[in-house]
Image 1 (cartoon, rainbow, N blue to C red):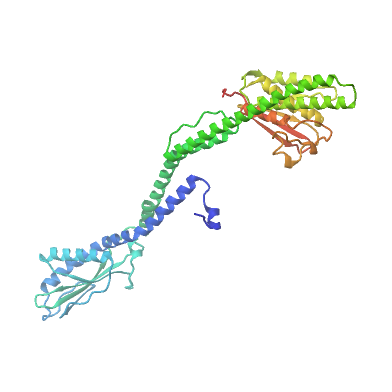
Image 2 (tube, rainbow, N blue to C red):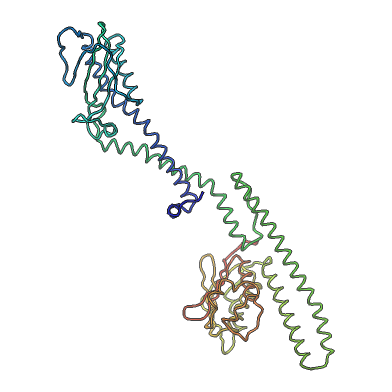
Amino acid sequence: MRLPSPLRRLWPKTLFGQLLLIMVSGTLVIQLMSSSIWFDVRFAQVMEAPVRLIAARSAPLIAQADCHAGSLQLPNHYQVRCAESEPVAHTDERRGRHRVELLLDQALAYELGRDAHARLLKVQLTDELGQPIVWRSLFGLRTAQAHIQFAVPLADGHWLTIDGEELQGWSGESAWVLISDYLLRVYALRIVAVLLVCLIAVRLCLRPLRRLADAARGLGSNLEQAPLPLDGPEEVRQAAQAFNAMQQRLIAMVNDKAYFLAAVSHDLRTPLTRMRLRLERLEPGEHKERLRQNIVQMDEMIGQVLDYLRAGEQQNLQQVDMDRLLARLCADLASAKEPLPVHGQAGMIEVDALMLQRCLQNLLVNALRYAKEVSVTLQPTADQVAIHIDDHGPGIAAAQLSTITEPFVRGENSRNQASGGYGLGLSIAQRIAASHGGDLIITNRPEGGLRVSVLLPRSRATP
């Protein structure tokens, strides 16, 4: 069901918020619909004391009634008259009126010692001006008067009509006490109960869904992660089973692709070797030199493809002194013009030393090729180490930052038109970082140049 645009903005984004809104709204609607039943019951309760009091005061009048005799001594706020036929009752279909009529008949029978066959003609709650008030009096906003009119048959065939008024029952408490008690017990406590039910339901139902979401996020960095357990509700078990099947298909597809590329790249070196041997038999000249350069480029490209495929393979994890590894690598690549200074210390970290050295070497060679004033900064935290490689080069166009680490994507337009490369250096570095459970982040520096950050966890279990 598609919600209107204004409601869509108010609709909660989380499953807990949606479930809570539905249940609270449903509870309030149901409670409002059922309040009419409560009002009927409350009306009968409020009228109980006045009805019993009127019955007690009317019983002597009924017992002594004689329509041919003189007038009776009447209590205050009571009127009595005789009629030759049964009076017509006011039309009132409320269930509360029926309860009042039953109570009046029972109370008169108790006071008279016989069945009075009373007929309730009118029942109202009125204010001091005689105006009917119903729902406000039920909450006790003001003290009301119960106005009851009924008729009983006499032995001589006449009907005695008694019209009496008594104060409303159960009206001694403050109005705000009654209202707050009603709202607290009927609405607030129910909403709190619904909130607790939602919390329990969401925790029980969302736990396997959250586990599924975590597995989906982790699939990008570790395709070989453990399959999801098949537990929880039936729908969640089916989703987990489908996720596990998808993971196995992805693993098979990636393995097939990697095997195919590795086989093709490896087999291409055999004809390249034959081409080198035949090239040596040619006479020296421009064509021979161009063919030699083409063979060298093809061999380098095949080597980078194989390096890219090996970058995501199982690592040989061990504790490595990150400071010594980086200092040795920077010393090998440094020159008089580019000293490659290293700032900060990281200590020991669990990595594959050869893979990480290849990752950092690719990044440093790129920085030295395209920029100047290259520096390395180690920024350790409790659970990870960040390696920042900063340069003062031309940077990378902002539109290319999101795709620059994809295979065979080159940033030549923003850096150096005369440089070579096949667009696999950053891809290899990114795969090595991801295979260690880390990440590779590339950003342009505000002061100019590029920052390439390698984020690595301090320790990671072997997958």
